[in-house]
Each structure stands twice: as structure tokens, then as C-alpha cells.
Length: 129
Length: 455
Image (cartoon, rainbow over all chains, first blue to last red):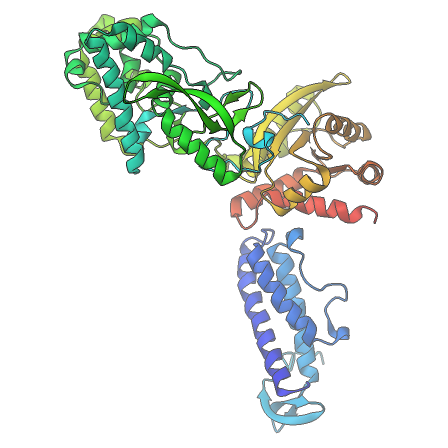
């Protein structure tokens, strides 16, 4: 991470993507092929474009994907799949930017450990042995 | 460019959506199949409409009074003159012209003021009653009388609406009733004119229109007329029922009272009504079940269902003009025509780029679209429409046909997009869940098409 502001922006974006994913997943379970309305697609695109700026190019889910085209009528399941991809990539980026110290996890800024606490990597304990 | 079922807005190139304007957009060659129901003015929450109704009734009764006071010829001539109002173009005429009632019918109407004491003393409260008292008076006549009696208002209303929507006006000569002198006068006013017959046009508020007047003979006879009064009566024809009504005016009066009591049920009819979602889904299932080809009239079944669903799906963004059939190379071809009102960004694009003032949708109940089908539509577009057309078929078009449409674009800048059952399914889904508009499915196809085009 570059700065505290960067971390703040990162955390906000990640939690918004997770919230959107939760909400749209509920709709998608009921009607996966239904189309998302323009307003919601706009919201998703705003957050995705913010995530694109936060992620290093090699960590972007798909090199040629920047945002949903409103006119291509994305469905609920299309959006859920993509949000999940972004969540995974943002989490990967987070794993690369945190360190453990006596059981607690801290953000790292420009290679230096900070006192900014965070939660452990989500995959911790789920690794294949 | 020739229009199919042209409207005044098309002639002046003013993009109007029927759903968004306050008046019924008049056709240039034919009437709008709706009628002005004076009862809607009576029950309207608008004080202006109520006042107009009062004026209609008082003027009608004043003509009756004229008749009663011995000026019979004058009254008959007035009523006859007011029995047709061609300027509004409502009814079923295919030529926008109707005929006035005869002098004898006028006399029969006005004689009611002599023969029925209650009418003589109090006049009519709802002059639509004449339908159930006099032979030869139907819903279109009630509508025409109403329009003639409020013509002065309609002139102002039309001018107002034309200014609002940018429809050009020109000096036109028009006759109307002068309420103070009870004389028909001719005046010259600024009005839109019909380029087909060069006559002035008047616009009518949509809120006044119904298919059948609230008070009408059929309803009276079916629901109110007491057939048990006289057994023989039930089998009698309309003339005898009318005679009975004149002799037993209290029956008519009680019918009117009853209709007034349930007036909250009286609503204006829309010019176009979308089919319900359930019907749309049912129609889609039927379409999907229908086999391709023309065996057992499958093509006809497919086309009929498509007319219903597409016109509903695309409303209100595309006003449906009509469906029509033509014969080309011995094959019957069915297509749907929509007015392009430029109500959507993509519709404006195709209007600007392809001069698509009306959009033609050709229906093909075939297993696979052939080059001939594309060429047929291309030739047809050249005759009448701009350079944009849609083929609706059953299965996705083969690659060589898609390439053919792209070549057509490259060579002649003509855009033919091909939609199939899956797109129709998506339209139906969108129609149901209301998250997007069905017209956006066409836009999506259009964008996909343009992305494949070279350059």
C-alpha cells in the first residue's frame, strides 16, 4: 500500500464490493437471468472502476474487462460472477499488503509495517496441506 | 418518403409519443377509432370539463327550446350542421369524412322536447339519452355533437398544443357555433391542416375518449330494459324499444340515475393497451411451441402472436402503426410497422443515420433465415422505409447470413438486424420484471451489429 489514504480507499472499495455482491447474489438466486437495471449497473461500474485503479494490472481479474456495458444488458448472475472475481483479486492484493505480528495482522505501507490493524487473510486455515 | 398510416406529427416531422401527449394524435388518412364521451366531461374532476359539459347541455337544450318556440327549421338546420365534426377525425371512417344526419332525424330528436314533458320542462341532463330515444343515433353521432358544441374550446386547445409541441399552424377557415346568437359562423383561425385533404385539424384530449359512451343503447337494453314488462317486448326490435322508451321516459331517467351513481367506474379508454404480463408469457410459450414453416398454418399462428406481443413489448417507446401483408415473389410476407418517435437514444440514432422514420419488422417463421429473406426486406426498405429494418425469426441467423447483412451495410449503408426467439424471450423477461425496457434488446442487437461492421 502507498499510504494510509490508499488503505482507507482500499477498505472502502472492498467492503462496498462485498455489500453489492451480497445484495445482488440474493436477487440472482431468485432470477439469475433477469437483467440488472441501468441504475444498479451504474453503481456496480462506479465501484469496479475504483477497484481497477486500486489493483495492480497483473492482479486485475481480466485484462480486457474495465466495466459493464449498460447496453449489453448484463444479467444478475453476470454481475455476481464479476463482483466475486473482484473480491478475490482485492483480497489477494490485501494479502500482499499485510503482515502478522504476535497474532495480530497489520497493514504494510511501502514495505514498512504500520500500527494499522486489519483482519487475517480469508484463506488462512483453508490452505491445502 | 411514404408513411404507413401517417399521423400529423409524422407529416411535420415532430417526434411525439402518444403516451406523452395530452391529445390523441390524428391520422391523416383515417379516423381514430375512439369517441368523445360527454359523460367523461360531466364526471371529470376538472372544473373546466364540467363547465364545458354544462355548456354542451345548455346549448343543446337551447336548440330544443328554439324548436319548441316554433323556429323549427332554424333548430333543425342547426342540429343537422352540428351532427358531424370532421376536423376531429374520430370514428371508423377510412376517409376522415362523415355524413350529417338527415333533417328528419334532427326533427325526431328535437320533437322529444315536444313529446316528453320532463324534457320539455327541464331539458336533458345528459343528451346521450337520445341514443335510447331516437332511431339512427349512435356513439359516433354523440361524439360529433359533443365536438361541435365545444369546437371553440377545441380550437384554442389545438392551438395551445401545437405551440407546445412545435406543430406548424396556418390560417384555416372553420365553422363553429356562436353560443350567443346560436348561429353557425365561419372564422379564420390558425390551425394545423391535413396535407391529404387540405382541411383543418382539431385535437381532442385523450381523457375524453372512450370506445363506447358510458350511456349507450346496448348497455341500456342489456342491463336495464325490463323485458318482463311485456313479454312481447323482449322479442321486439330496436324501434319498438325506442318507442317504449319515449312513452315511458321514467325508465330512461332511472337508467341515467343509475349510470350517474356508478360513474366512478367510467374511465377513458387508452389509445393503445398493452397485453398483461400473463398473456405475454402465454403467447411466448405458444410461439416457442409453434413449429417453423407453414404446415397447419404455423406461420399464421406465429405472425398473429408476434403482432400482439411485439406491439405491447415496444410500447410506449415505439407506437405501433399497423401490421400488413404483402406478396413478393409469390410469397406472403407479414410485417409490423412502428412509428419512430425518437424517444430513445438508439431510436434517434437510427433516425439520424438511417432515416428510419418508421421501423419495419418482418416476421419469418422459418428454421433458418435465407439470403432471399434479407434481400426481400432490403428491397422493401428501399421503397418506403429508411435504411433500417428488423427481421424476427425463430433461430439465430447463420454466419453467412450475418455476413450478408454486414456486407449490405458496407456496400449500401443499410442496417438489417436479425432477432430470434431467444431475444423475444429476453424482451418478455424484461417486460415482466421492468428492470429494463424491451426496446433495449433491439438496441443491444443493433450495437452488436455495428461492432461487427468494418471501420
